Amino acid sequence: MESIGEFFKQVRETKGLTVDEVASKTRIRSDFVKALEEGNFAKLPDQVFARGFVRSYARSLGLDEEDAIHRFIQSAGAFYEKQDERERLKVRQAEEERKRQANRKAVAVAIAIAVLTLIFLLSREQSSMFRRGIPDQASTKRTAQTAKDASEAITRQEPEPVTAVQKPSEVPSAMPKATTDDRRPETAVSLAVAAKPESETVSTASPGTDGPLGGITLDGAGAAADGELVLALEATELSWVVVQIDNGSPQEALLRPGEKAQWKGQDQFVLTLGNAGGVKAELNGKPQKPFGPSGKVARDVVLKR
View (cartoon, rainbow, N blue to C red):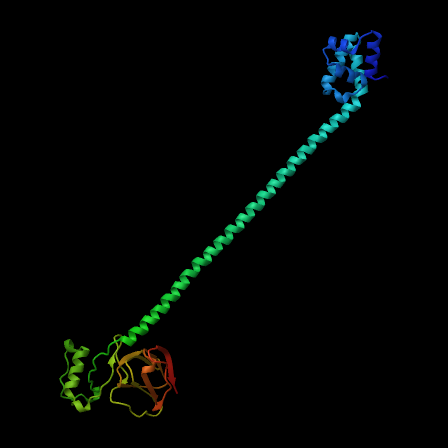
């Protein structure tokens, strides 16, 4: 079967019509009439409009329109099928490109979120470390300042007046007993001083503000009994002293230069000295090494057998 274009051209020339006359009768542009006769379907509009041109052309020539459409399908069917396939391919390619762009955007957003999250976590960790470091430094400074202030306070402390104290065993039997209302430490010390002659009293250290001086021997250094430890301290500078005998309660004293104090125990003595270089010590008459420089605090110094 001849093509639709050749069929139309042959009929038109048989009837003695020109392309322009057909274009005028069908109201189809002459270039579209020529493209249809030449079988150049690529120059024609979409298939729907091309079918309309075929019907109008067949009508103008007095031909059967359905037969003309059948010839058109036979001639142009392969072209329009390929054209449809190309259109579908374009649509598919456009859809795939759109998906690729969407995926690239999603990946870029995910990477940006991950980077921002990492920056936020690092910033928070650095801030947390900085906040933890500030209290530690402040606490260290406060501790150092407190120790310095305590040391300066000990070295500047004024000596308390020394009171002549009589040993309890030497109080005269004729001494009247103190009443319940008079049993304050100051009253007992005054009565003891009044009862004993001045030549028999011994100058000792004043007690600390937090505890009594129980355990201090007041009549100078004495010989150690068998199995007994005797600790003798002599102050060369003003010094605050805390002595723990064996496992007993700590005993405190403030020694002025030249003053001596003595303690007796069984196993050991634990000393704390406010002025380590201001005190000399003897254990059972044996001189001990210096406890430290002057003005420094010496803590938990253990003297034992």
